[in-house]
Amino acid sequence: MAGAAVEGTTRVVGIFGDPVDHSLSPRMHNAAYAALGLDYVYVPLRATQRELRSAVRSIGALGLVGVNVTVPFKEVVVRYVDRLSPTAQAVGAVNTIYHDGPDLVGDNTDSPGIGAALKANGFNPRRKRVLLIGAGGSARAAVHALTEAGAADVVIANRTLNNAERLARAFAQHKQSLRVAALNVLDDAEFLTTRQLVINCTPVGLKGKTFLDYDAESTPKDCVHFDLAYGEKPTPFLRLAAAAKRPTIDGRHLLLHQGAVAFKIFTGRRAPIEVMAKALGIRL
Image 1 (cartoon, helix red, strand yellow):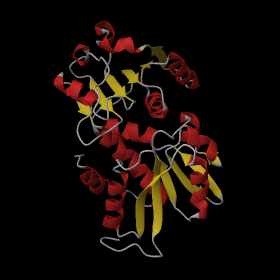
Image 2 (cartoon, helix red, strand yellow):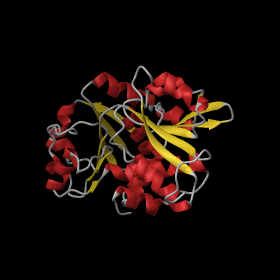
Image 3 (cartoon, one colour):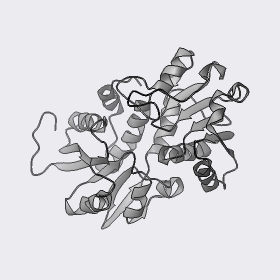
Image 4 (tube, helix red, strand yellow):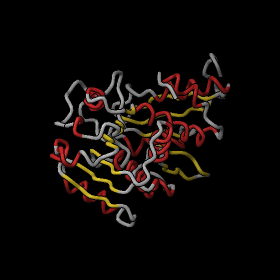
């Protein structure tokens, strides 16, 4: 519906979050709808923790096609849907909710999005040694993507070790080595020399703050640094990696590729990924 007004026939997709005004998802999805001439609109919908359950149950009542879910709700929203897709069940987090008949289904497009973003940037996780920073919903999606891709050794570093251990146990059935570590590994030069991929799964460093004490220069020169978060400028984590002249992947690449999966779920159409990338200001 390029340039068209919202009418009574317009189908509505939204995104739940708190905050949500920073999200680039509306820009990306609306550009895609316009490119394909679809009578859809994508809108930000702020919901607080207290309001989240009723917000999810209102999806059907309001006739929404579905919604995406952003931080900090990806894990808690699991309990509010009628059932989970196999991916969301495995990950234990939901970032996409849609109708299947009378049911609201919780899905996770972050996991395939992470895999697609790595592939698009020329990195194959198979048999690679990885450091994950964080143990929340995004980290769960990353562990799922990495184990599915055959990563050899994944170390989960987190401030609260119990949370990292819980995450490792959730994927204990996989053959890959899943280990946990305290955040002091971020400046452990001997350990960092063994890593081939470092993924930041936390919002640490956003809102103008500095990142953790991280010794990017001790990683191999070809060690890829991927931040799942994004901002108007490169995140503090990616700035550290860039200063050390290490290859980086901006979080908008995850936004793009998980969004393409969600677009197909919501519309039944293949996403115009070049249009979506342009809307986000990134190159494929």
